[in-house]
Length: 189
View 1 (cartoon, helix red, strand yellow):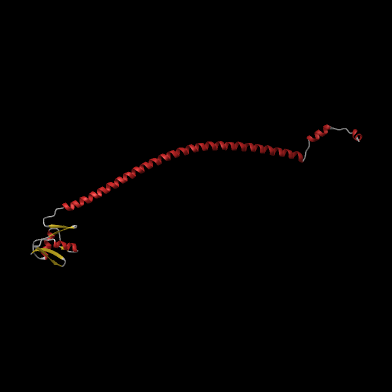
View 2 (cartoon, rainbow, N blue to C red; view 1 turned 180 degrees about the horizontal axis):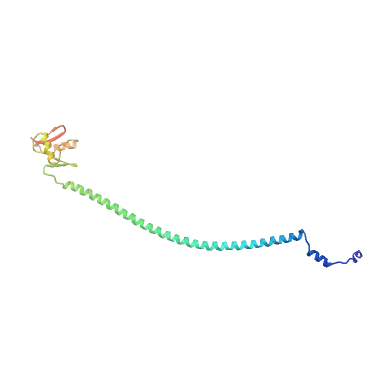
């Protein structure tokens, strides 16, 4: 069998040329696949460089932000402490002012009561609650008694309560009173 092929000359060069100059679907597929692999490789490298750059940028930004936050926290803590100190001093001042107001109110009440006690009335006037009464020793008509009261800057008394009735009982026994239309006028016996 070898004899059949013995006369055939084998051309290695033709085979080599044929495989190199081969055209068709196989050759274009290989070029396409090579291009895709090359592009994907370049994209992978670019993606890796981008990720490394973002990581470095994030790390630098995080350190800068942490430093700023620390500075802001220290500033706010300082302001809070100053605010607490001011609030504390204002509370103390408010308490002192309230105590002073209480003292002054008590002093005012004391002075008002002392003023009432020290208030001098002309002779014959008697104090009852927040009013003063004059027990007149003169006799006359109701109109003359009223005119006399008005000349003194007063008016005839109107008895409105049992307490005011007690004023009559506290008078000297040589005086008596008479009433006319709820007005009183004092006169001697």
